[in-house]
Length: 357
Image (cartoon, rainbow, N blue to C red; front, side, top):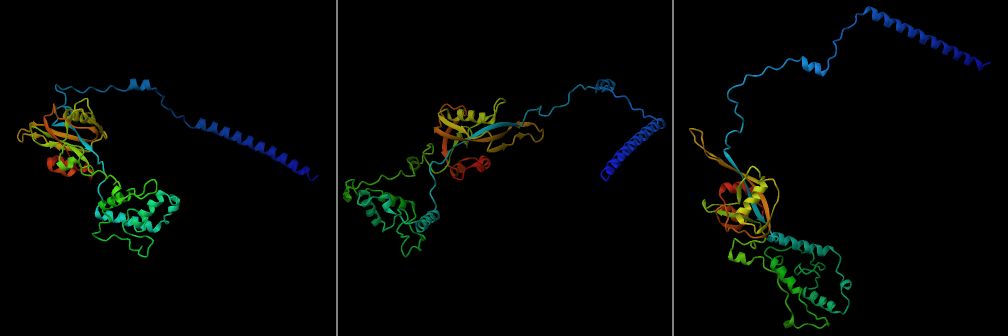
């Protein structure tokens, strides 16, 4: 009996909910009908298609034409010539010499490294009582018991190991002293049979080539084998103006800047060079103002806008014979030498892209 009561109550509640829903539906329907009869209908304009709107718009009245068309910008002659020049360079072939401070600092770092690393174990590298072991002991005695070859007379394991600094004026850190010490140490003192070689029979080790070449000694500025630790720049001399500059050419309508620069180099210095233009973006530019008559404002002489591109030479040499630009001389100069011969206006335009060495 207790379980049946909730069931009948739930059924009655459901029947009541259906009646409430039907009553709400009838009342809302009647309300909508009443609102439709009492409220006047809103008249909306008919929708028009795009074709209808196009035909309905009024045509734009034509503007009266004049006898002369308005002037267009750029219709007159340009007061400037657009030119492209190539700064052809030869990069350094050798590293520069260190300064005395840098040499002393490097030697100090080598000595400090010998103090901090583990001791040298010769048994790992040389078999006892062999020719190499005998030669090692001879050279170790000449270096006063120091395994390192390029730290001077300094013992990193001795009681004076703390004194590893290089004094002012000392030649122990100079390139010449280090080269002589390494060449002396590289000499063979023991033959393959384990016999000592007499001092007069020791073959000296060939010294490296000097940094200064024959072109440096003769100051031949047309050769590329000079100033091996600096960048060289190709400059040419104009026969008419007697001024030095870079190979330059006027840009035609069909050319880009790098195409004009390559053509100008070929016309000026020939085709016997293997070159490479670094990029298509100018590294410098120069503006030469045109000459204009003050009173009439008439253009007397057009100016120049010169865009400089950078190039590298990999092989070959410049040849001015039969050039079409009237050039008489060429030189391969460093930045300091180039500053002395170039016109001031040209140097001020290109000095920002000149290498530090």
